[in-house]
Length: 500
Image (tube, rainbow, N blue to C red; front, side, top):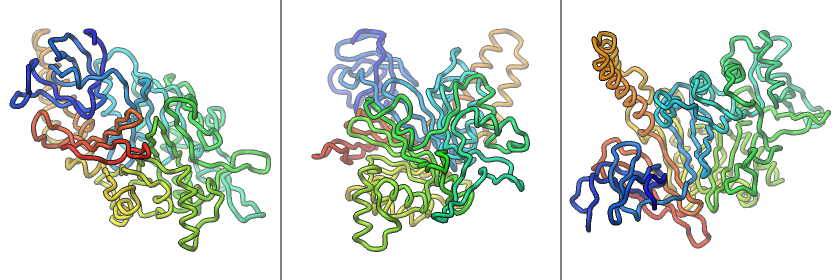
């Protein structure tokens, strides 16, 4: 491997030491632990050791723990109550799926991409808003305001909330089909022109938060397009079935209206309808798949299973349920699944059994009135996961500190003191030192969101690493809890061990 070459940490992790170490490393002092796929730069070689630059302290890594292959990376960020996920593709492209309700996702990305110091803009291939619930979309406000964040396309589920009055419903006009008694949303917003019609009409957009966030994106000059995605599209553009990484769009499922328009079925009320039509994505890379399930509910899960299997639901007998599960697995079965609706109790056991993952990931927070994840939901996840000990990860359980740490007392006091030092600096050198200390304090704030509570998935299409940062490290060489999944007899990843 030549010097100054970009590379990545090897499987399952690599320890960075302060100096090259001949022979055994036992008893030597490590500087930090990198996990599989972490970026590094090889500077020079000394024997079978390589000096590397990386995030955190530089040092030396054994050549056997350095690789050149870029992995698929899926980071489930601790955004508090809500969802937020950063996908980094093997081609080094960035896709955001939801961003929570606060600025936690923004702070994570600011830390990851160094918005404050890196001079060039960061281009995200896509931002995906799974549905118009505040705990999924409002965090994008901070990103659409960030001058250094550019987006190729913003995708949504076609439902745009609007001011309700005598002429309009909150999710747009509805129509009841007399032939089957079903009700449908008839104004599914598919493109930017249709969205502008709502955003530019104050009687429709009003001061509602969701239209305001979309308008911020549309007017920013840093977003290429805003378009809906649905099952009719089949796959996310650029990630079709024949690509190395495919991203299949399983929901929302539209139905043809009388004139061939795209309609969406009404699921009893506003909340269940916009949740039930969440954008559902299934990533496939080699033998590894990941399902991102939005905020699906019972009615939506039954509808999706019936749509993809052609079987009636709800199933009334054990035999009928088994048939639905068997048929449903051809579409929904996956290795890792993001749990729908933060572990809500509004789910079907049949759908969980059709998904049948080796690992579940729950995204939830402390400051919420729903007790997510629900006790019965956790029990069902364990019961219906694959294998004797299916893995259940939780962004909330992975950290004990409060997730909304914008202004903790001690840090706020420190920042005020550091700002005062900048203002009172008498020389350029004093000002530079004070500004440097201020930046370090801000880094601490951003990093606390970036590492504690986040569940990071790394895969080469065969093996899978699931990692969460230890809040109190055992040593500098043991800073992460690592769960390893490796190919079984059928080629599908199986949980083999945990390292923590």
